[in-house]
Image 1 (cartoon, rainbow, N blue to C red):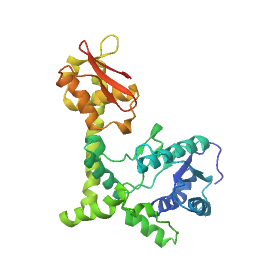
Image 2: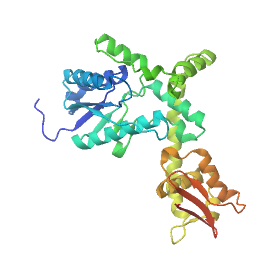
Image 3: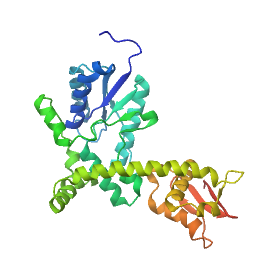
Image 4: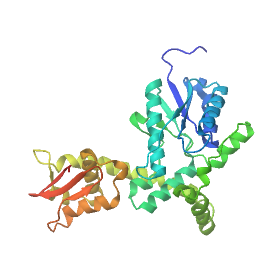
Length: 309
């Protein structure tokens, strides 16, 4: 059928690996039945020799699947937050820009159930609370832009899909480099857990993610409502009213306030919230607490003041 001008565009983010190539193939197959246009984008992180050539090869393969538009976008990866976080930030910035440029309704990501299990374990190791245990959402980003349709699919199934369709895939050497935390977890940590606990660890961790997400969503809603009741007429947070909240709700109110003041969400850890929380629950005349994003929190006259330092 001829495409109409208002037919929504869905882009698939494709690295050339098995997961994203299988997703690209699935999108190409389903697009007509779903009534969408299918396109693709690959991000060249410029972190390895020949990365530009590989990005061009991915574009060629996506175009052979009749995806349109397809493009490769080169990015500069900084150092803030470590190599993995910096690469992720650069990648999502490029995907956001591509979605805006093409007017895409959604961007599909090839994260699998195995990726979800790894994310849950990384969150557990950081000790960042139930939200970090909830892993990746099926839909996230501005207006649910990012969609992860493979979260219930294991990595091996995606690889088999490419094999039976004779789709060439590229295995990123970073995925087996022990210098990267996720790589060590994938090739050492998870296999050790399965050896100790038996098969089914990945599935159990994925279930944990969903249960944790449901709980975290409920607590976030509670915190959003509670925040309105703990501010005075000038909008400042009242310590006595904060103290009366359950700890899980209070810390969410504090986190929302810190982010609103300019703290980057990805840099706010449990230890930061614990320090701010002690201004409420363990007041001993502490000095102002310095937080990521040049934000400071201090207690003045029974109020919690959160501001740029």
